[in-house]
Length: 245
Image (cartoon, rainbow, N blue to C red; front, side, top):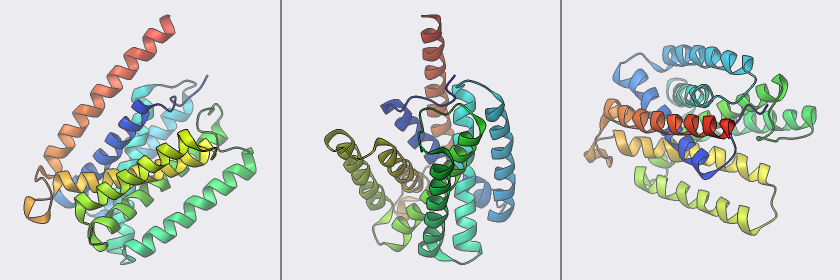
C-alpha cells in the first residue's frame, strides 16, 4: 500500500499550512520561549526522529502521522536554518548555498540507488528514507531562502511572499503547459512552498512596525494549528469513506 498522499491541490494547501506553522512554532520555541536555536534544533530533531520511526513502521498512508512528520521536518528545519545562519554566523546566502548542495546530493544519490525520484509510489523503507531526508533539507533550505528574501533582499515579508507565490504559479503553468518532468517540478514546488511558508509566517508574526500583521508567534501558531488539524480531519474522513466505498 502507498504510504504517501496523492499530489493534489489539497496536498499543497496543507503543505503550505504545515510549513508556515513550522516557521511560527520554531520561532516560538527558539525566540519567544528563549530556548535557543541549538537546543531547539536538538529537541525538534528528536521529535522528527520519533515521528519518522512511527511513519516507517506503518504500511499505509495515515494522514495524521504523515503530516506530523511533515510538521516536524518544517519546525526542525526552521531552527536548524536559524542556527546555521545566525548562531554560526554563516548568513542566509551561504547557508542557502550549503543546503542547496546537500539537497542536490541527496536527490542524486536517491536517483542512482533507486532509478527514480517518484514521490507517489513510496512503499518500501529505503526510498522512504530518501524521501524524508530530502524533505527535511528542503524545508531547512526553504527557511534560509525565505529569511534571505525577507531580510537581506529588501523585498520585506510581503514582497518575499509575493515573489515566491509568483514562482509557484510559474511552476503550475509549467506543469500544465510543458513536458517538463512532473517529478522535477514537484521538488521545485516543494522547495518553493517552504520559503513561501517562512515569509508568510514572518508576515503573520512580526509587528506592524516591522511590516508584519502582529499576531505574534503564539497567536499565529494556534491559528495555523487549528487550520491544519481541520484539514487533517477532513482528509482522514475522506480516506475512510474511500476505503469503505
